[in-house]
Image (tube, rainbow, N blue to C red):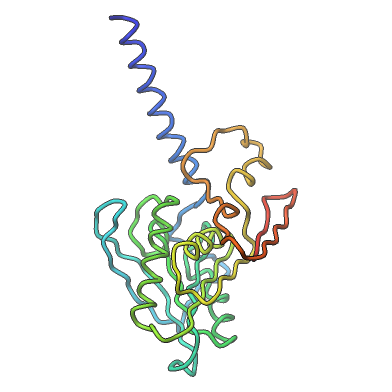
Length: 228
């Protein structure tokens, strides 16, 4: 029985290690925070606040997301954009980008994923971020069914934007800024790139819709940029 016990213990150790590695990689990728960028304190002033509530199919629990809403002056006819921010800072840190989109004629909804800002303080992951973005998209679709709706993602939010675009069939366009091809591509350029990847891969290339022209710009720095 001793070899069997050792095998079981070894398997448990592997599973525990994978769980710890998955949590570590999730923290490195998302860098969740409820902090605002010091140089942008008060940047969210005059932007409307809303709350999105839904039940998660991933955790089977109730979810509460904090969001900023910045309608266009001609709100009754303006196209609508869902803004998905990057790592580290909350959505208020991206308020200037939300204002830029609004100045271009969009009504803009920007959300904080779980673990960011005032949203539920759950450790974010790839599957949870995808679900949060989809819940925000449903919110827009229910309130503005006749409007043209666009998805905009910056950095990490670009990966979430492309995933969302691959799931829905009612988006008028998807825009990404300063994003990357996949997390394994990013990790391969870093000193800890030898670590095995777990569940948070954020592989955008595999999700680009078939039949659309693709343009991938690779770099030797922190990753790559992608667009279509």
